[in-house]
Image (tube, rainbow, N blue to C red; front, side):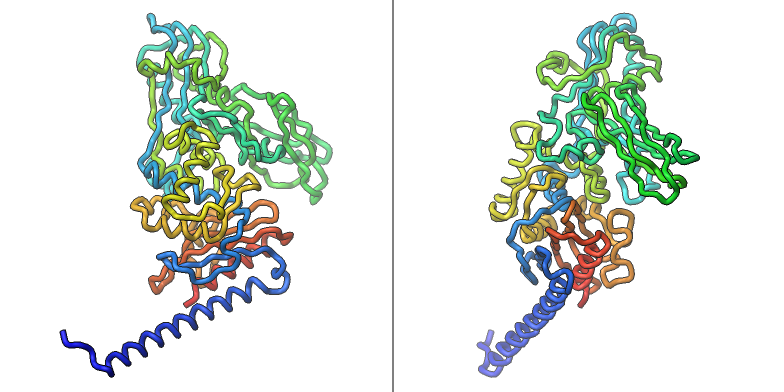
Length: 498
């Protein structure tokens, strides 16, 4: 090869300088556009955190990028990406049924033990983007319990002489995170986390206003498996009056009571309330499944979280066993619909599979080591408490999120995360956002919100083939949801522009 001439060297240098100048101008233009949004009147006093990078993780824009922010449900990105990488999208667990005595002429002498290993899918959910696909959805929370009951019937079991026990000891206590607010504990988004799960460890609540003012409102709880009481004190209020309905658990946790009023003419509303004892709840549901196939239980329905109680029974071959859906299916409810309980089940599963125990402490320890060792995030830029982001003392920096998201794109299992993320304009938390903007159909991201906090982190896949990774976090604001979301979205739209 001949050495380059002086003229060719000068031309090459000029091209490099011009390329750098154009890139600097484009970066400055992007910075100016984002700054204008962040500093707009009414928004300039918020605590903003923004990190924007290219697909390789090179910074394109920073505003407080290394500062700690409350991430709300953006926290779910951590547990899903870490679990997907460490456990793999094909990871599954088994739920098994054991006996403490022999089967003699159709009668099981001893207790029947339902033992869960952290399968969250004994519930009503869809696990595919195409919900019409065969097997995409489970329309009943009893589906898997009915399958276990049918296996027992096929083995000749007709009567259980002892008790029916729900054993949730695969995961360690506590069942409720110590940093969750007391009021939240009555609702589905703070459901207890044990090795057994049924119907998201929650009771579905349908609220229907009465026909006339002062009459009782109709409140229907389901599924009714006989483990809780209910006292309905809710009334029907004037048409157009405020909805003051609320649901509380009784002091001993054994039931619920409803208070307040539902305005006349209000359409029926559906919510879900957390159960107090998830293991007994699952066992009681299993008892109903057994009855449907003609199996009688003579004893009582009870629960345990003592890992030693039925260790001997668990050392024998199970009488019935069912395999869970793969981890890739678990990701969809967590990311697409922001299902808190699935995320908390997953962080305990991380602790059980890659740590010393199925606990929040061990799950967080596994996450921490992964973020530091594999993703190379500075340990001072995050502090995690739970898997869902419900705890208000989770903290992560915007840069930590973009580093994690950039790392995930190079993980061989990235498609499982990408497919589970909400996409702008499609079913999920971004269905009605970015419509009619340059970001329509281009955003795959996770949203987050708790009081005074709104966040969004993810990817923009632009028509020119470029990918931008972003995390936009607003903390300590008092704005209405519609106003802060519009401003957050306007920032993301700027990232989609050429």
